[in-house]
Length: 141
Image 1 (cartoon, rainbow, N blue to C red):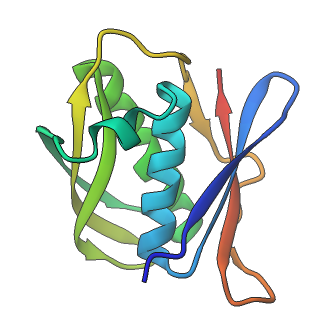
Image 2 (image 1 turned 45 degrees about the vertical axis):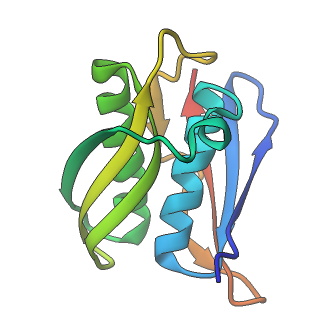
């Protein structure tokens, strides 16, 4: 059962994204969809059946929070290079410190929001009182 969600929060110069999910994999998927929504609103919902671009990612990090931020940073880099919005991730391996995955998306002509970077500021992956994973991710725009 997929119980993840994201919500865009206001911030003075950047965009803050609150992400929560019932599990680690779902948190990554929800964060990816949230970032895609920032890049081009509702793009993933419109393209859900026809994701045609695939890229592979392999990452190592010191902890779960760093792995999430590094993952989003890598996806953002590939997105800018390839002019693709990635909407889906399929994990081949996912642990607290490493991942191997395939990301899927579609080409775009332009982005609604030009995200410069995914920051570590305020990022801390925690388990809340409802046993949900949550974090806030700040995007530099």
